[in-house]
Length: 145
Image (cartoon, rainbow, N blue to C red; front, side):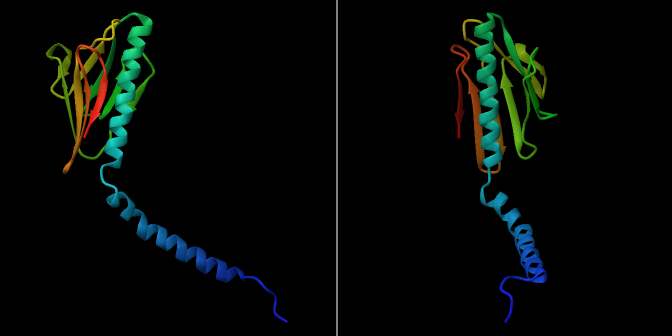
């Protein structure tokens, strides 16, 4: 009478096949969903811009969010809030002339009344394009595809 169950070798063979399938299939997921990381980055940046605006209103002082396209980083000036922009694709910053630090970096400044200097960031990867815009009058942040 044979014992029921699987041998260690059978289990190891199945695990090896599953690992091989995972290695072969995982690159397909990233190409099957292009632009997902750009959209997530746009949402995260928009959240940080909204946080900077809320901070300006709550503290009753100007708050700036600095963006550096070359290093692909951003941070709220004087706070611990910072983030990283995606490594793939092209990123374009546009802001008020007075807020430009150089050709690839600058700030978007929020005022205690909720307004801002305005501006935005565009994420481009092939045909996909996400624009995070800050209205200068209201300081409201929006995302456009």
